[in-house]
Image (tube, rainbow, N blue to C red; front, side, top):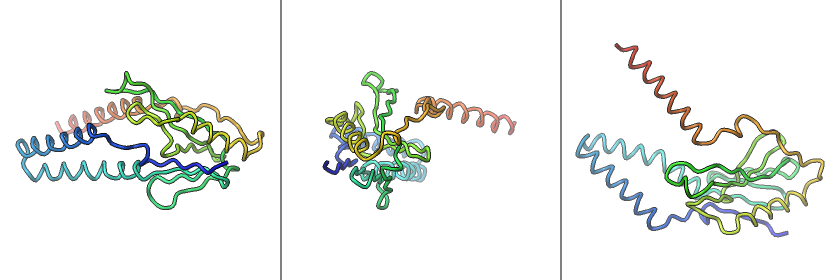
Length: 194
């Protein structure tokens, strides 16, 4: 079988409309910030946005996965990556997350992932599908990953992990819980001052 390589830069190609939206957001942020809060606050806010989003963008753009005879190598854009030998991988599947927000009507997001013998789950960068960034032949690529895994391991070694609490946690649930916690802590901080 041929070695498979999945790269984030092949998957996340921003369209002109995405870039125009991002530039419009930044221009609006700077304009409103200078008008309402002054240039110093605006510079800090702009810097904060860059510090938060540039590493995320860099990681998703530079991340890659390689599937070959030695196993699965995962790199999130920093360093040489980590190789999981086929003996360390006990299950391969696809996680489906329901979409929320403005893309709720567009459909779910799917990402290929591996389960290690140590109980860890690892998503494969560059091998995902979403309405915003659809991957051509996603199911075929996942089938090729599973073929590598099945041909490189014994059947007794392939054990489907049991569902855990964290499997039910979606990004929406985590966001709601974080919002409620922030509101409660904020309320206590404000109430303690008065």
